[in-house]
Length: 213
Image (cartoon, rainbow, N blue to C red; front, side, top):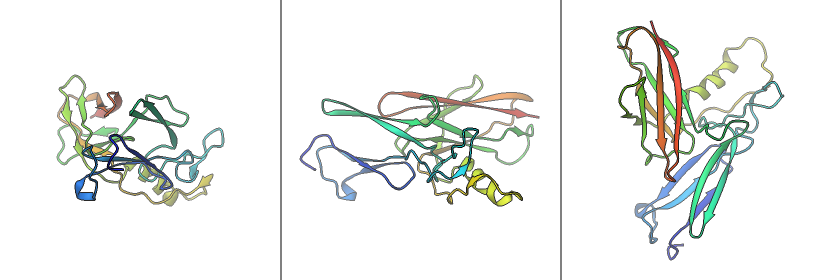
């Protein structure tokens, strides 16, 4: 494929989502600096595991915290754009925030929060601000998606059988970013804003409200 200007690899069957960029150190010697592989998420998610919703459909969140869904590939001449669509959600839903709901005012110790940008990769710049503060960069931090971890541990903690099928064990997600919750602001409710501009020029945003007491 090295003789072609624009290449895209599509792969699947891992039941998580991942962006891979092969470079010269990986054996890629094409005209472009990197060869892009998109390992696409699945409509069944984590094999239709998890609790059932009111319609009887399993949650199906994948092991990297990506909700089950499907992708759109738009090709224009020799260029392409990709977009992920979470099943049953608005097309704008591209980021999930995991953060404390309440923290103690001026307390010691860190209180991190995490943003899972479902289509993200290490090359993306993810930023946050709290209330009307300035935008700051979040730290790229591949780790478990804590929201998904809660879904799994719920099956351990329950003393009555849950309706559905136990989810798979989590894997480290390669589209997670972190930052610290600000506990020095005045007591009351505050809003975390997270945004990212993807490689195709689209801006995605998500919010989470927490309380300082």
